[in-house]
Image 1 (cartoon, rainbow, N blue to C red):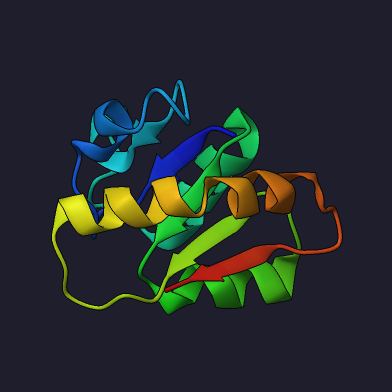
Image 2: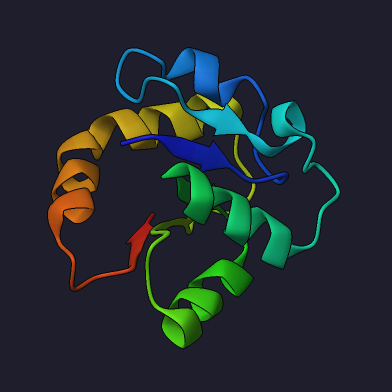
Length: 110
């Protein structure tokens, strides 16, 4: 699964998680660091990426628009980049199962 990390997450995450989620991107690296949510959504949709965010707006967009793209909604509040990396590593099997489940558009992780 290729991930698109939202502005509220560290731009180091795609590199730190490249062994599990290769070719993932961060919105800053693709020129969408200050873009509105709709543009980020469209970029993820057109490039086969799942959005990783702490922002509830993407979860709501998924309910309204359906998927793709899928949304990984991080419910862990203020934390370090290492904490987020550890969570995504710990839940890798759940994330990969979520990728295969066409009936679910949002996976809440906390």
